[in-house]
Image (cartoon, rainbow, N blue to C red; front, top):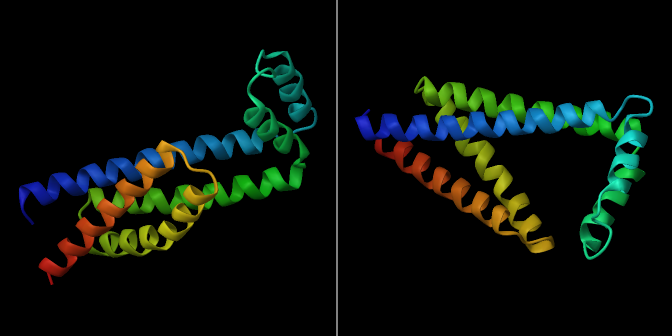
Length: 150
């Protein structure tokens, strides 16, 4: 493997590990909302924020959040932990330059792209588009790398 391939895999690994950290933080937040009174405390705090005027989409999102029950937050937390585990395995394997990690990353990334596209069409944001572009670039790079080294 060339030095540039080594560096590119390290960058992708760092990206995957950063995603794992963010997803774990979201999971911790979901688990934190399970406790008795935690959701009500969050609701009370949000109601004190000056976001109610001119921020209708945000208020609707927060209202939907408060409709969730403890079981839904538990399910969300578990799913996020599974995603984070996959990202950690990908990141660790890519950092160690493991061939299986390259294949795993191709499969996982390719499987999530249709969901990303669907989400962009539902609720487009520049951050979602950026994530899609980065994931497509990673996918193309790894496929080329796997073909070249066959």
